Image (cartoon, rainbow, N blue to C red; front, side, top):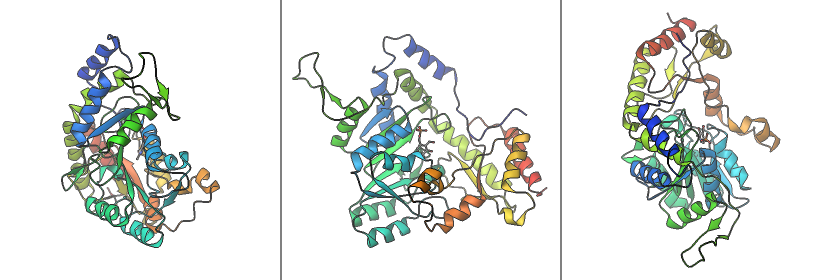
Length: 376
Ligand SMILES: Cc1ncc(COP(=O)(O)O)c(C=O)c1O
């Protein structure tokens, strides 16, 4: 069996042809594909505006510039990739890590307690972890009751929805961000985007993406003005062309992810391997996370990772609590009381989940893991 990673892109001949077309065209960057891709992002998410960017981290950075001021306290989750809270630090604001629920998402009831305790807290960053959408009714309640700004990190959740509210639609938030890294639902190589329904935010993001430069019709043909400090966070036209082509396959990708999730769920019934949440058709299953209580077993999690790797299967762990990272500890973090996250971290790991995972590969993953855990 060839190596089976935990995630992998799916690229077909149409994708390759669409990239080659752009490579043969006059515009490798700053050409027509950007707007076309941004329109597709709006179509998919239902948001009014989208800004395509170099990667999801750049998206978080620019979104944070529009949402935060120096010194703001931002409620956020320890169960994410580093970039979510790093972006808060980039702009001189302060993340405050809140414990998660059993399903891996930030605990919005605990967030509400924090908002009640401290009326200076005015921002919340959530992640729809693994593609499992956060309760939008609760987001709406928090936004309206406490007049807070909300960012939805949808890096895992393109194609997910809660009660018909699509991830990235920003129905109950100010901005959402997406990532198009190869392991995500669709890829542009590296890439990301911000969606928003606010026109002013959209205009500012366009300027921040390109060095803070603004051009307008009443300027001389060569003129531009730099009005604030911006960046070069552009996405290439061939990246956008790949994204447009990938979008055509998104529904099928998610269908496949659902099929894979159902098979895992059935296979692990009445075993020590507990899927993080029961099958949820509204999740876009970026990850398939399981929990195993290793205290009851002879094998450790570390040993399981090694043994699976020996069997050519790549497990991953999403995530080490961000607040426990050395850099965050050096800033005084790490001692937050997060019992659910602590237990989650001890027990969790992610199994291979990607559209081209073959049935015999998945069966091999299932039988290998159950054997190693002495379940067979
Ligand atoms: C939840 C989350 N947010 C943000 C990012 C950053 O995205 P990128 O890798 O495109 O910079 C990732 C990437 O893994 C992620 O998983």
